[in-house]
Image 1 (cartoon, rainbow, N blue to C red):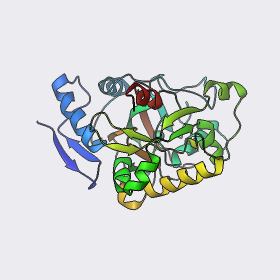
Image 2: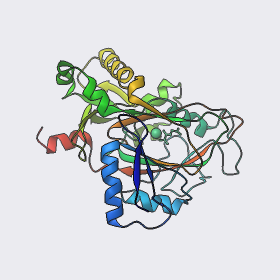
Image 3: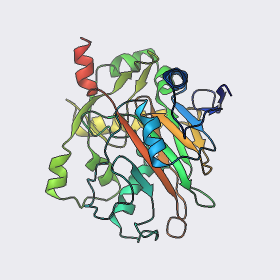
Image 4: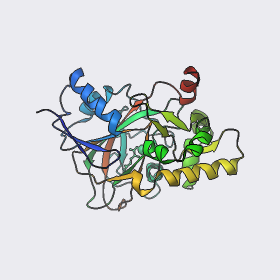
Length: 297
Ligand code: OGA
Ligand code: MN
């Protein structure tokens, strides 16, 4: 069956049918998906009966699959292989994590609007999230189109923003949640990094705001002014017209483009119900400031 594509939002987010992610995929088949991805920024594949091996193999078509970083805890009891991130509220014995579990604290960071790994020197290009077990209600994921947000800004505003550079840190987003209990070693492993505020997407040529809860300050600006601008832009870019809410079904796989979208988890009854998703993360090629410099812009 030839793949088909159905828009689920006027600006971005499309559902692909007629693709089975559990088997190998030819380059031609993937080229179709890549083109759809470049245009729609988030793709949904439903009813996929896949295991972690299938997910990693599909992810590798998009680029290098990253190993998971454990900055919050030293995990001797990992549930999943190192190239699959455990987006769940259960422990290695299948029990719901306790209220003080560091993994639970860390997961709460996903409730803030963000793009994955902008706090790494080379951030994530895309992430793939597969729904394995879901709560009866809640636990949706929202996505926001940062290309549409950029397009909607007045011309004069865009000119002011174009060259700005932003410092991102995982410890900034975690501090916003009151989660500051990190060792010096953990902090030293993930020092603040610089990213451009406005990215140009190589696949579509479209510009996009590059924002995240990890964005801490504008380089060269007084802290409070930088924070005010980042807050204002985030509020603007996540207005209702730019946002699509995905209500998960078991067997869904969603791939989003971290270069031009943000996302956030929505709450659910996480003390009583299990929610288990497996994430693979594909790395970008180069730090965004270095890319801009290399392009002579
Ligand atoms: C992620 C993430 C949101 C969610 O996996 O990167 O932010 O709804 N997940 O679990
Ligand atoms: Mn995320």
